[in-house]
Amino acid sequence: MHWFSIAVALLAAFGIIVIGVLYLFSPRSATLSFGLPLPEEGANIAWWLRLKGVRDVASGLVVLALMVWGGAQMVGIALLVEAMIPLGDMSLILAARGSTGRAFGIHGVTAALMVLAAVPLLAGVA
Image (cartoon, rainbow, N blue to C red; front, side, top):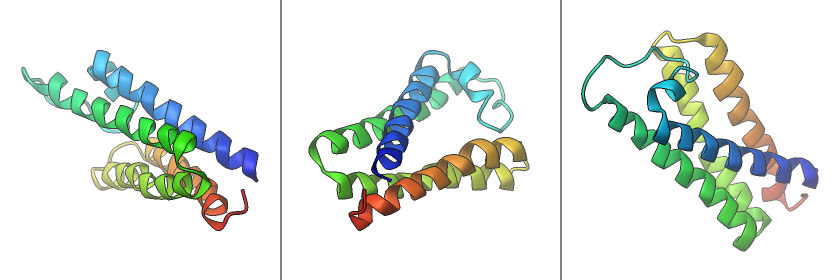
């Protein structure tokens, strides 16, 4: 189980960093895969979308930092807490009647994998 938990933690960390970088450099393109329609046009929309990019990069760096300096249980805590992000994204997309497939297929699966990886790390099994 250790390899699974570590692999999911690395995948989640690097994946969200990549997504964050996409939001920073190409915010409208990155938004297309999220599961909601693009926001209305406006001079500041791209800057609002870039805020998500900054937060995504920071979220990934937290997991990586804890993998290096925090130990298995700290990584488990971070994964468990940060699983609230894709779970919240999924809930908001469903509430807004966005893409059900993306809500469950991207955000729901991500949250589930993060929780599944966190449990053995928290239990000291991994």
